[in-house]
Amino acid sequence: MAKHLADAADPRTRARLPERESLIRMIKDWEAGRHQPKDPYRLLYCRVFGMGEAELFADDAEATVQDNACFEGEIEALELGRRVAASDVGNETLDRLELAVDDLAMAYQGTPPAELLKRAREHLSYVSHLINAKKTLIEHRRLLTAGGWLSLLASTCYIDLRQFNAAATWLRTSAQLAKHAEHPEIAAWCLETEAWQAITTGDYRRALTLTQGAQVIAPRGSSAYIQATAQEGRVWARLGSGPETRDALNRVARLVSSLSMPEHPEHHYRYDPSKSDAYVATTLSWLGDPAAESYARQVLARMESAADGLFRPRRAVSARLDLALALLGADQPDEAGRLALMTMTSGALVPSSYWRAHEVISAIETLRMPEATELREAYRELSGPE
Image (tube, rainbow, N blue to C red; front, side, top):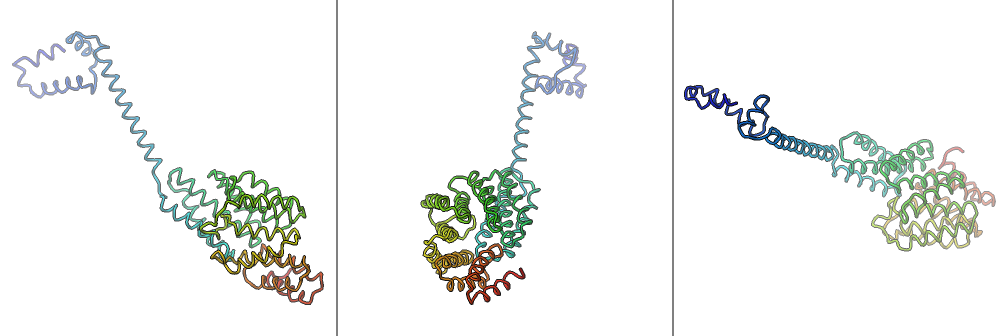
């Protein structure tokens, strides 16, 4: 090192500017800590400055290492943040998809199940396409939630069409998506929907287990919780258990008492006061309660007049069948027959509810009423050969 310094000061070497400049750059690099001199120059440097090797080099080296580590840590953090925020989906796409889910749920009341199913399947195909796209964790959960609702709606349409195998497949898919999205309300709706299918096939004990299970997992006071409670009441009525039926009706009344009419009461997965009234009418008619007739008349009048600003044909046909069954219990088979015929020819009765019309027709046939033949013929035309 001393030789290099002496050479640099020698006038005879001033002409060797390239070597001198190279030496200066090297020394500056050492001093700046860009790299450290190797032996024996480290020792010579220490002798020139009268400092120990550890004192002269260690702090700078450690500082350099720390600076580099800090820089690398910042880069790693920035890269992680970039990857987490990277998305090929985007909020706008998910907003539109969620609006489409609500639109389909609101269309349920007035759209034939085969037509609604087609639309739901198209949106499910789009959800499937987006599953593999790059997206944030929040976007992924929103996508799973939308897929869960759409799968549930598809299953409901398949039940309405009495295509139970396909319904079960989509119901399992909805439950799976609900689990991954950590969405207990969809999971509860899955059980409630399965309970409705069990009611349509007469498996009331299984339906009871499913409705009670839905209440366990549904958020307290949610639409799924209220619906499952109301469905439990209907099951108890089919089982002929009066005290249990009224207990369920009272629980629903307490849950609904604080509800206001939602902006879109036609939404299939939003419980509202008018839906509660319709369920009470059905429950009382199934139980054979004398109060069923007046209650069903009030519900039907409200449905047909669209008093809340919306006509819901699916609920209207259900109310007619409730009233027809209540009229049979009140020994008024003539009006019951007219209501059953009106229901079957309305075009709004879905296959999953054919059994309810058949129940009224069978009772009229037992009474040997003259209109029984016409009703039976209308039923065959509606449902096909038995």
